[in-house]
Length: 244
Image 1 (cartoon, rainbow, N blue to C red):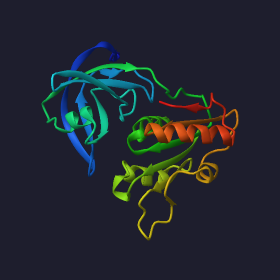
Image 2 (tube, helix red, strand yellow):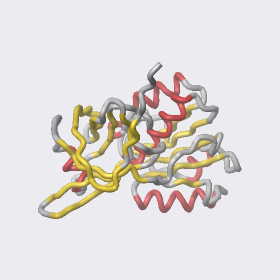
Image 3 (cartoon, helix red, strand yellow):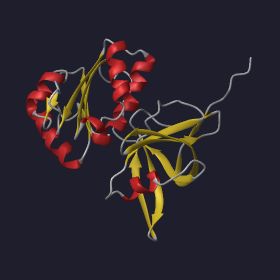
Image 4 (spheres, rainbow, N blue to C red):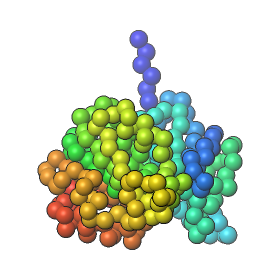
């Protein structure tokens, strides 16, 4: 019986990838689907990233983006990108159309998940800091790994919650998945976190420190710097805190 050989793609130099579909996730966030050969997949672990390359106003720029599709997926990969008015590359991507080609290099290794690295995993994300987390969470749930997952996801408003339907269905369908949302501008009826992510929220909604615990942290730099210090004060070791 012939077994199909899967090609694992990694490139140090920028290579063109064709955009085949665009999905509107929120009012300012889209998921872009890029084609791969049918028998090919990106050579990456959950949480690794690609660089998107572009020439904007005559200047070469690049930014890292973590694929949101499950590692090992063949034939395509997804990038989920929030548009920022000050973000040169995010605006560039949001202006692309199906059929356009985008230059990317990598994948590149970052703070990623490795199977069996922990049995209790916390995820603290702000805004599009969720994209490395979705890749890791999708991987763990798809493989049925015996890992307890705790997500703390901070956003400005309810409309900004990326992948909200998926978080809700995961919580219904997987007893090992827990999600807690924090909104800076919460509506009156909101029953979860309000304001910013605090030490109390981290203590209440993440697994406690220990040798079997890992915490992934990703979001705006000021948030990451502040919460990394808070996590250390709670008792998580530097080794346990992973920044993709």
